[in-house]
Image (cartoon, rainbow, N blue to C red; front, side):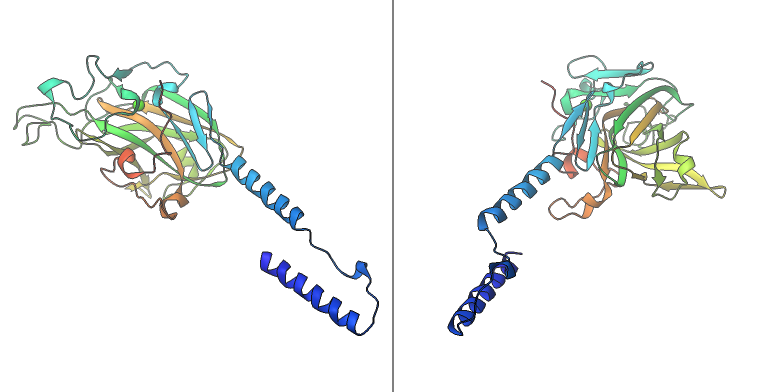
Length: 292
Ligand SMILES: [Ca+2]
């Protein structure tokens, strides 16, 4: 843009000297004079607008950035029911003394708390204690849903039911919940839009350390399938996520929707796969606020 204007100015000067030397008259209306001050003003306005779009707001505990929505699960306005808020220093917070494998060196729960489902059994069960979260989407984009999750696997006797050889409950227990979405969206995953509006199992891995819930389980033409949860959201539209308890002992640190394009964006390259700890793998701003 600047180069174009510079060339225009040079052309103007050249034309002016030619016209002068030939004795012709100059009509100022024939030329557009560029005011450098005015040009700077335009640039500042553009910068201000960009800054405005980068703004982060927190509404009812839900942090909304330019290309993500993230929140602690306890900000729900629903009755917690069979979900329990585990806090560091209190009974039931994982790891709890020598009952569990140490998680030293791992990143602990954000805000030293998480929500744990205490109903059903370690394998699963019917959807119970629904918790809802409503927010206005900041951007028209493909958003992926994922959650930071911990399987609070207990010590057990090898050889007994559900017990692995390492003396802890098997790594595929306590690892899922139910979820559904409401609002004006369409699917960008393997499952149909209408399927995403009904309760489905949402599972992942966080075997005695923080990992993630990242795959939906459903059926397509009668066959069981697993897929990321990716949806086309619209800017300014209101959406509601509902999670319900499924497997007992599934712990949720925080819940995140992020613009799928962020995965390949320069400087923030990441993936969310089995065992991915969201806090270790994703940029820091894709976390809820720290509560004082
Ligand atoms: Ca937390």
